[in-house]
Length: 243
Image (cartoon, rainbow, N blue to C red; front, side, top):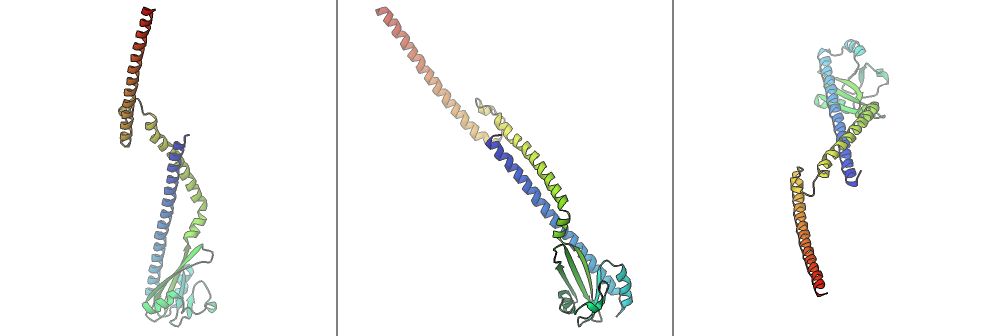
């Protein structure tokens, strides 16, 4: 493979790999944001439904739905004391007044916050709603973070990128051949008769002019050579006569 062919081949290959990788990353992030927003909206809807069905301090209702809900349900008093939690015993839970979603809900009616786990593998989204009696109903949902999803699907992502790289190499090889084939088939003896890229027209025209100039020079040299040959022949005849 010539240097030019190598350069074109690797340019196509690296460009293809870069585009595929960038596109894959953007698609992953876009899909994750859609998934995250949908999960958040589900939590908001569930919190709203529970709040509408909840009485002033209907802990039995919370306990009943808390057994079947995959989400964490917490009821917090206006002073930050945890009244109910379906995941953790309220005795061991501290005051929640300083939690961002709780303080925001007490102030504005609703509050939300997202906390990333120490392992960077999960995100916990909290949504709090202030009830008519002043208590705050908070629901929490835990989902895989973007880092967690990438970690869990690293094998699949690697396989996809490898497959993309193979396709990129094959495509680059085909494109390199397609680009260079018309150039390699150029007839330099008759440049303007070639059916190739429009971008090469000026170059082919210059080659045509160069060929015409060379042919003119060759014709002139041949004419001079013929003239010299004629003179030399005449001199030989003269020498024979005078000899």
